[in-house]
Image (cartoon, rainbow, N blue to C red; front, side, top):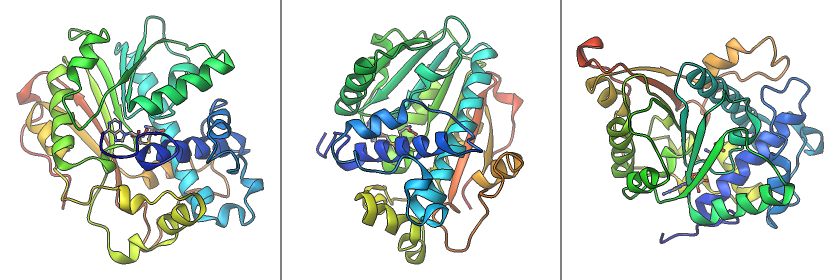
Length: 311
Ligand code: SAM
């Protein structure tokens, strides 16, 4: 693929970072999400084997920008998209497609309704690592699980179809923490492919970053600590080209779309997140992040007008 594809380096390593955040979230007294597999995944890779798995193991605790603030963001994100996917599955979307699934363990840890199929698309080495860890644990998925090694920068639809994707069934799609690393062309391709393969009633959630971020933000504590502490250079890995307004494209194509921030959800979960909620901060790496929730109505006239996400 022209770049380091394993979990030990390159963009695959970001999957370990998010898994470590989920491990830490799992051990918090006010955990928003529980992922009992995350710690095993982090310990299984040689370069992350010594990363902290509990906030108590971090010398500066919650004040640490990586394992405090950013990990809490990932914990909240996990919970929000857990709730979203389960709601979609219970509403009839029995096909779930995780785009850039990384070390996501939702197929194993969520209580899926009967008959669900979870497709996981990611790089071959990431999926191979994940398989080795889950196999060693003897973990059993709670839904039919279909890992698919494919490059999201190229046409990945044939691989999904070959894996048994049903083009007549409503689907819940998730692109969590992946579009940030893809080019504008790959984002167009992803949104277009999702639209093309979605029947009415399908749902799509994805995370984007309104860009570009200022030099002050790029040199801020979250990015700096990820680079210094675990050698994940997100600024170098992100694609910094101007982003398409994918929510607008979806709405113009007959979907509805809502755009929300993590801070919106932090307020909703504030009772549970006692003492360490997520509040907006100046020059913060989380400020530009948006979570988009789209639903395909199947009737182009249903939405009308245009939806602009980007300023
Ligand atoms: N969605 C997962 C989560 O939230 O835990 C993983 C997020 S991780 C930050 C980004 C994932 O995107 C990595 O697993 C990486 O391998 C995957 N990825 C990045 N570029 C990709 C590409 N071109 N094709 C397939 N997967 C890709």
